Image 1 (tube, rainbow, N blue to C red):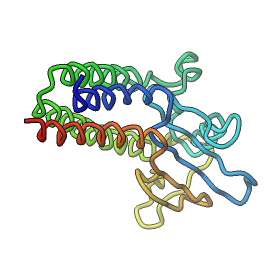
Image 2: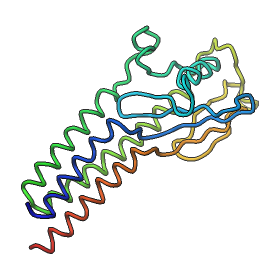
Image 3: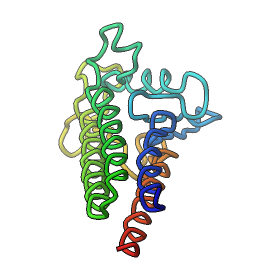
Image 4: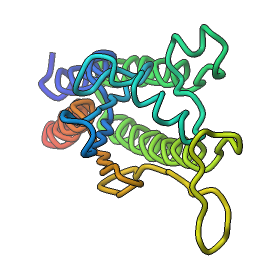
Length: 205
C-alpha cells in the first residue's frame, strides 16, 4: 500500500479514539472546595474530571441555583432531564467520518483527502457552536423557584451562569475554566495525518 493511502486510513481510524478520550473539560475552583470540581465532556457521556462524583456534585450545585439537571445516564433514566440528542448523534458522525476516510484512503485520490478534512472542519465548527448553545441554555434557562436566586442589580432578572466555551470566567464565588481535553489532540492528529497524506499524494502524481 502506498504511504499516502496508509496515512489517510490511519488518520481516519484515529478518530475512533474519541470513544475513549474526552473532548472538553470544565473545572470549577472555589474556596469551599479544597480540591477543584471537574467534568469531562465525551462524545457520548459526561465523566468525573478531578474527583469521584464530580459530575453529581456539579449537578447538585447547578440545580441549587436553578440550572437544569445535567444529561447523565442516571438523570435521564430517572426522568429528571430529556436525553441529550448529541450523545446519540455525535458517535454516529464519528463512525461515518471514519468509514468515509478509510474508503477515501483506499481510493487514493488526494482531492478526496482534502474533502474529508474540510467536512471534518465544518462538523467540528458546528459542534463548537452547538456546545455554546448548550452552555447558553443551561446558564440562562433557570428555574424561577430555585433555592438560590441572585438577581441582576440593573435588570432585576435572575443572573445567568453561563460557563465559557473556552477560557476563564468568574461565576459567583467559582472560578470556571473551560478548555479542550485530550480528544482535541486526537482530532488534530487525525487532521495532521490526513494533510500529510494529501501532500504526499501530490508528490506521487
